[in-house]
Amino acid sequence: MVAPTCGVLLQRATARDDGCPVSSGTPVTHVELIAQNRRTSYIMLAVEFLLIGILGAAIGYAVSGSLAGGLVIGALVAITIDVIGWMLAVRATIALTHAVEVTPEQAKVLHDVIDGLCIRTGLPKPRVYIVDDPAPNAFAFGRSPTNAGVATTTGLLNLMSRRELEGVLAHEMSHIRNRDVQVTTLAVTTVGILVAVAEIAARMSWFANWSDDNNDNGALLFLAVAALAGVLAFGARMLSLAISRHREELADVSGAELVSPDGLRKALEKLEADHTVVNHVSRATSHLWIVTPLRNQGDDKHAKLNSMFDSHPPLAQRIAILRKLEGLDPDGRGPVDDTITGVPIDLATLAHTGQRRAQAPLTGGLPVNTPTAIPAGTSAGTGETAPVVIPRVGQSPPGWYRRDATTLCYWNGNVFTDWRAVWNGSRWVQSRGT
Image 1 (cartoon, rainbow, N blue to C red):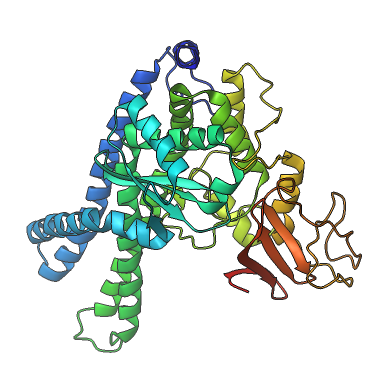
Image 2 (tube, one colour):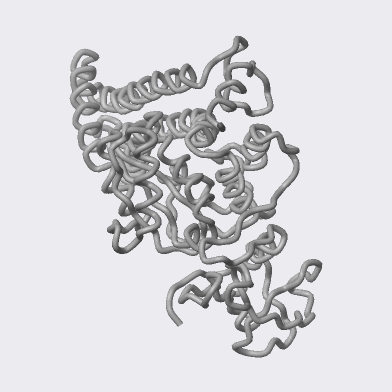
């Protein structure tokens, strides 16, 4: 049985710096880890309330000129904003991620897997969503276990086997069971509100009359509010990032306790190989996904910035923990399962298809409307024409294949979808349609 193995390993684990989700120098059980995580969640909720209160108190003090008045106004602002944020957090998450709720008739396998996990965990069934995007990813959100949702991308459904899909969804259901979604979902609106206040105050300072001696330093006041809101937003983001890394590791181990570790491990190895990024993504929701939806591969400043402030621990570190649970070499990879439709997956080939959009297009004359795959060792932008490789139904893995020198099309393992990526001279621009 896998669950007892996980429990024994966790009970014997001690504090170390290799990323294992154990923070104490004494042996700790999985149940204790979940209890600690829930306590941290409540502390985070209080901190997010406090940050809004500090901003409100500062504005109240500036308006009333009284410390007591500022504290009262701050408390009212905090309560009002947090209530509004709490009520709108789920809707904001759905809107920002472009998630669409699906019925059992529309996504039978997805619902069947979630039904099975609900039986194992005793949790009420969350609402089920799909994000129409070729990038393989998933996330959970909600205000409580009774008001939660789980979303997967179409790219994830195309790439995974049923066992791997079960591993990913076990990870997401663990976020719900461990009470992570309360904090992570509220953070979507909390940080967003602080950033919005900072931007509004900064813009209003430009309209203040700096030369008027009787304006009570209104411009400086707006700048001070903008600076404070910006600092609080940055602090909230950093605190969330620090805790999110441990939450992801705990959800991995919790998911491995629900199902076999190899399902989630194989899924993460596929996600490590496929670097496709989500098309519609916001920094406000990036911490929700099972792997970062932002591009963090490459030497440009955007990739480096995303990597520096990544809310997820390195995938290699998470995979190593799961491989240890299986008694495998932590640095090894594969083998992984075929897709749910029976398409075999080779990690090296998958990694290569995922890198296509990060490469400049070939300058050599490629046959128009002929899908091509760039073999390993062939660098783009060299002027060389890549050999033509036509994807085969049930054989070629999902990924991006060339239509011509400046156009990529996404192959889901069976057919070309209507997802396109066109090179505009400096980067690939992803879009839908022909």
